[in-house]
Length: 74
Image (cartoon, rainbow, N blue to C red):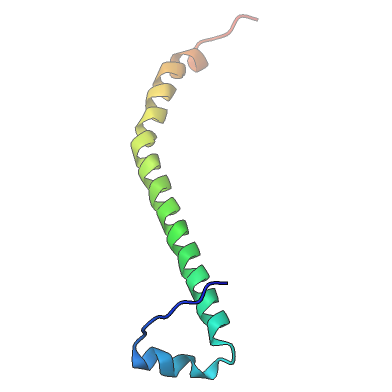
């Protein structure tokens, strides 16, 4: 475990007074925030990647369109 000295707004300090184990509450809140930030970053990267690649599917489809339409020998 690592001990940290932090400064928080008075209203936040008052709000967490109801929790018996404040350290655990703060740790869980930080972990939840980090997880949320990572998910948002991944979602953003996936969206950006999709936008960059969505046109390439159409190009591939055009190339194969003739092959799928033509009649295959029996």
